[in-house]
Length: 98
Image 1 (tube, rainbow, N blue to C red):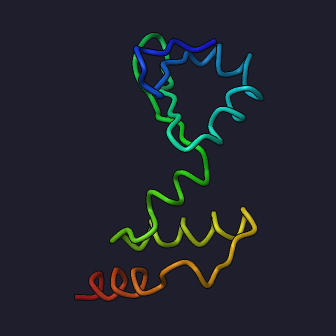
Image 2 (cartoon, rainbow, N blue to C red):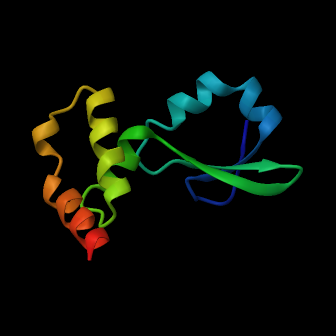
């Protein structure tokens, strides 16, 4: 499977391997600390992180786009929309109007 450096949960994976092993990689991404660095021709192009760890990472974010993604992910994951802090979205939108 993907290359894993030392004890790091970050794994380097090529686009071909991602395509071939997608179901297993998606299962791995359910773990909070697992990250994949997707490479194309040996160059990093993207970082893959599970939806729930990403949601945890951006909650309380300062940007309106992060708060909006938080709402979307919470809805898709079947979570409680009331748990998403909308104050951050409101503050971020207010700052844009300044």
